[in-house]
Image 1 (cartoon, rainbow, N blue to C red):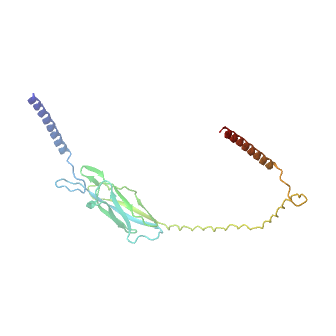
Image 2: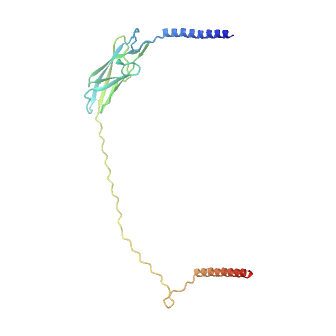
Image 3: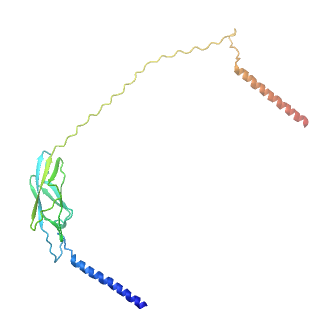
Length: 237
């Protein structure tokens, strides 16, 4: 029983390995990857035609002054390698003159004939606005020979507007209220008390006097009760 189980297991593993080997060999033969343009691999052809982008600059308007070294333009690609396997190519375009970027690949290469896409960007210059015509991204004409793509760079100069200084509002001092002399009130006359013929004041006979009498009377009553009770206790003792 154990031998039978081992034989079935060997057959299963052998079938899996055999099938995988055949399919892998077939894929390797049908999908041999050719290097892209800019990649080197001995023994494989690289049909990589190249071309160039020619930039011609034109300046109009009046700015603060064109750059002395020329207009700086940078080229990049989103899907292809650049000559020398660099990330970008920078050139100085003379004022009213051309500049050429050469050795650019027309397509991705290998089995991929997708056209290479290139972008151009100008470094901003104060008082100038630059535009490319046509607008990118750019692709070179597809040809078995070297191709050429012309691009115009138009820089328009302008004088930056000088901001007009705003007048600072002058604070008007608040009017100081003028002090006015207030009339001094005359002292109220003191009430005159009626005399009793000898110059003395009349005795007070109001409600306060009655209240005092009531309080004193209650106090005396309580004192009397207290004394009575005290006396009774003394007798009992």
